[in-house]
Length: 88
Image 1 (spheres, helix red, strand yellow):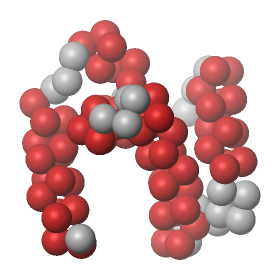
Image 2 (cartoon, one colour):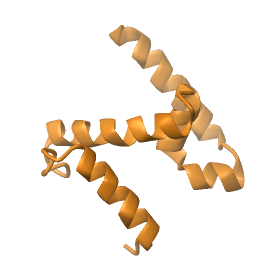
Image 3 (cartoon, helix red, strand yellow):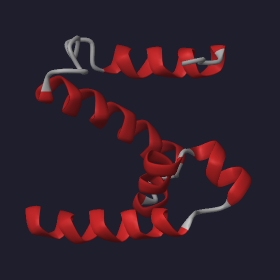
Image 4 (cartoon, one colour):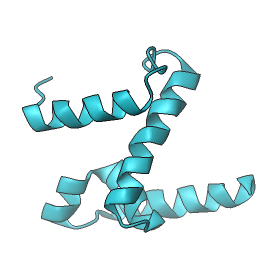
């Protein structure tokens, strides 16, 4: 896969936020740690708007900026929020 320099720098920032998540490709715990760091970043980018942060996480910020949200992104947000209520 080809990754541009800006994306590589962003990815490094996420990895740095979860330095003990060294085996994120095969470890559930490490994947959750890194995913949490990524989502925290998306939440800050979305000015703490949870639905927008979920959209960034699922579809990608740049894609949303260019294309708007896709129908499956709205469905993803609805599904996540519905499931989240079960864990409160």
